[in-house]
Length: 204
Image (cartoon, rainbow, N blue to C red):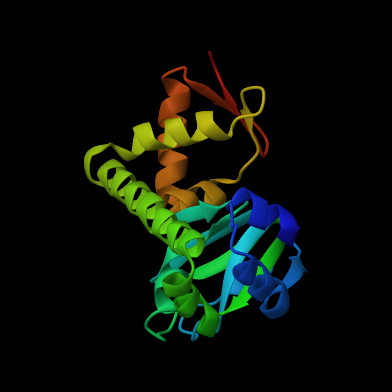
């Protein structure tokens, strides 16, 4: 898995390849495992090699989705903490069984100055996360929740069926279960979907 990471990131510096092999570890995690917890100091940068991780914030007993991490991605907020020695402001929980590359933060900052390929990796992560967050902000600010809900269902549908609870949808979209239930019923009355037992069918 580490060799695959090195190849995909095009890490050509032999010294960095050796440092990665000598100073990092790889761990496996089940669905529901926390890999980052809010208000804890970031001691290790965690990079997803395989699987899926949900990064979110909690506010007044509500969860607000920040983004998902997939293979070869890391949490930008954790990456920035490596340069500042500060606490995490997010939680990160495994959504699909994951394999994680763990790098102590003391190396992350030094590598950014020593190795061009590592600097390129960190800059790419910051740039892509910035664009993602700007797009997410635009959606929150300018698009009605009903439209965002329908788009989300379409993106998650498997053969036009989504198997998620109203509470799960509320968590993903940063609202309450009651609001989601009301919007789903409205979409159903408009003939855009059908609400079944523990599943939602999107009508074409």
